[in-house]
Image 1 (cartoon, rainbow, N blue to C red):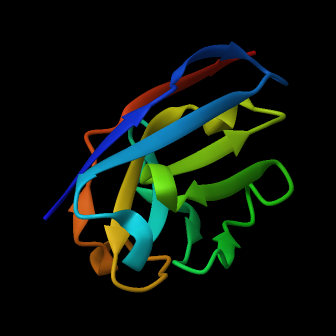
Image 2 (cartoon, rainbow, N blue to C red; image 1 turned 120 degrees about the horizontal axis):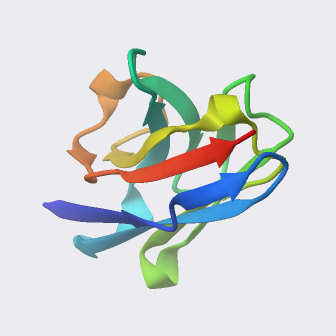
Length: 121
């Protein structure tokens, strides 16, 4: 089993930055792919970014060039650096772990409780 806890969310003005962290306990992240998803009020949960065990990554087109996903396996932590934030980025952000890198939530086995990101205009 893997337990995931997100942190780093908050309120930021448009154009600002936040760094989210996903800390794992129990089993190590080292053999898992990790993804970030987000869900805004009234919208479906959407894929944001994912990183494989080897460090390969995938980004949603809406965040490519602005967000960077990374991982530190020695700390069992995955990060999502978010720059040039827009009001459209406002959502609850979730991290999740899967056996292999994927862009759909159904492929992920373990989920955190989420952290709120609010971007004001």
